[in-house]
Each structure stands twice: as structure tokens, then as C-alpha cells.
Length: 210
Image 1 (cartoon, rainbow, N blue to C red):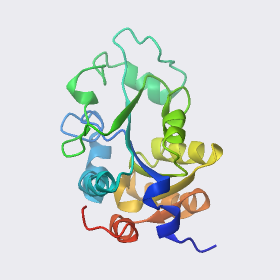
Image 2 (cartoon, rainbow, N blue to C red):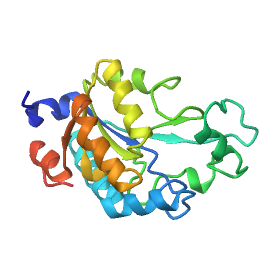
Image 3 (cartoon, rainbow, N blue to C red):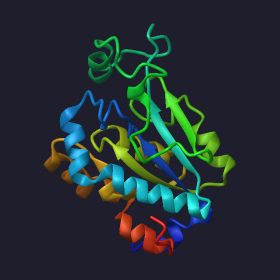
Image 4 (tube, rainbow, N blue to C red):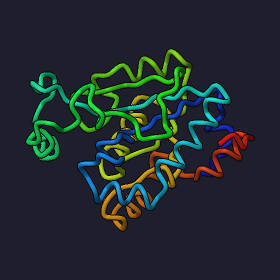
């Protein structure tokens, strides 16, 4: 079924979510160099920065979904191989340390919200994200960040389960290996999201502010 991007992603009904675009994930302090390289090739940070600038200029809420751990690991359940691998490094994404910060150019601006989580691989369960979105009257989430493998895919599935429309600009997300990420974007995301690009989204918003 054809989707009218200008309607689905209308500023009055949308919010932009960034997923783990953090210095310790895909930035200068990355613990995941292959993922950081993939994000760099896709232009995740600069393209997301364009989307965020346009969103803020139009009054579209921006929420940064971040991951972090306490030094004592309180609040974090080690129940999968990914989390087990991360917590083996005692310094990985510690609360209030530089690796948890957003990558340069993304903020947070004073109008942004930051939704930090201590557990899991996606941003809705056990956080205030759904409540915040509903307080803004949001019906569509625009997903950016990493990774297509788990985090962004989990975000999209959870958003669908909660009744939101999902829009994903392909040049604001990345995963590894690249051919796998492309396959997920080509074969899974079209079933649960509207795929677009940064340029197409900004055009739908009628802005060049990005």
C-alpha cells in the first residue's frame, strides 16, 4: 500500500528517536569499531544531525535513547550474550562518563529529552519513552541510529506493538555486516516501517533547515 510520507511523518504527529548514537558506541570512544565504521560509511551522524536540526525548527520532539551501566551493574540483567560481553568490560558505558555522551553535533539541545536505559537491547520496555511520546500526542516515530541488527529493529517492532507508525531514513541507520544490514532493511523493515531517506524526509517536511 503506497504511503504518503508527508502525512505519515507530519511534524504535528511525529517524534525523532536516536538510538545509541553515542561516543562509546559509534563515536570517537567506540567499543565497536566495525559498527562505528559502518555508521561512518552510511553517514549516520551527519544525516541524523540534519534530521534533528529540521525537527527542532519545526517543533518535532527529539528523544535520545541511550544505553548505560552503573559500576555496580544494578538494574542491568545479564540475560543474553550481547549484554554478557559488554559487562565484562568494567568501564563500558558507565553512567556519567564520556562514552555515554551523544556524538558531536547531535546535542542534546535544551528542548531534547534523553531516555537512558540500564537493561535490554531496545528502548521502550521499562523506560518512560512510551509515556513521553503519548504526552506529546505522537503517532509516528522516526527512528535513527544503531544497530539495524538489534537496537533499531527492536525499537521498530516495539513501536509497532504499541500502536505507532514507524519511519526509518535508511541513511541514518547502520548495522554489521553491511550486506546483512541491507538484507534486514530490504526484507524486514518494509513490513513494519516506511523506509525513506534524509532528503526525502526533509522534503516531506517542506524544510531545508537540515
